[in-house]
Amino acid sequence: MDQLEQWRAKLQEAAAETYPENKLVFGEGETKPRLMMIGEAPGGDEERLGRPFVGKAGKNLSSFLETVGLQREEIYITNVVKLRPTKINPKSGRTVNRPPSASEVEFFLPYLKEEIKLIAPEWIVTLGNVPLRAVTGEKQAVIGDYHGKASPLENGATLFALYHPAAIIYNPDLSAIYQQDLQALRTALGQ
Ligand code: URA
Image 1 (tube, rainbow, N blue to C red):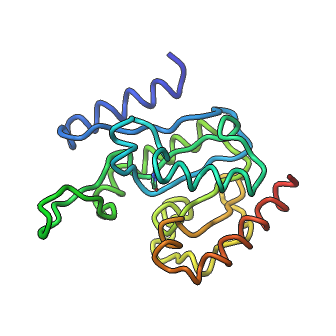
Image 2: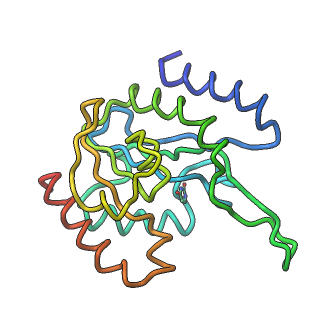
């Protein structure tokens, strides 16, 4: 078993105790990449297919990759929280996504740190506040202060923070900023 498989088995075992009802969605992709992308948590499509950033989020990711000049296979993609946070919508009675809770983030954070160590990327791209805070260790960090520029991290990698693509859907004013940020990332990567 390689180190990543050992890490996965350890997380699977711990999560089976704390979150016995949930299916985990692990990271995937190139395990020695230049760039590691970190999202918030899987949604419904991700849980169903057992893969991060598929369905609608996968489409967003494809356009991100195209703009930045990367292929999905050459990066490693993961989430802070490896299970789908849900709630019941009181109006429709349906199961819907919700942001991860503080305790879910706390549970998964040590595993994310280990995952980053094992993957050892040159660049870490975070989508939104949850992974930004997880990676910087600053609980009050806000994406507005970090987005669109390279910031060195203690682990030797360089952070490039982006808004979460879902935030752009809810706030169209962010769309132009997001596109500028992607161009800045492309330049920073030398693509
Ligand atoms: N899908 C994911 O896997 N992560 C996100 O943050 C959003 C959608």
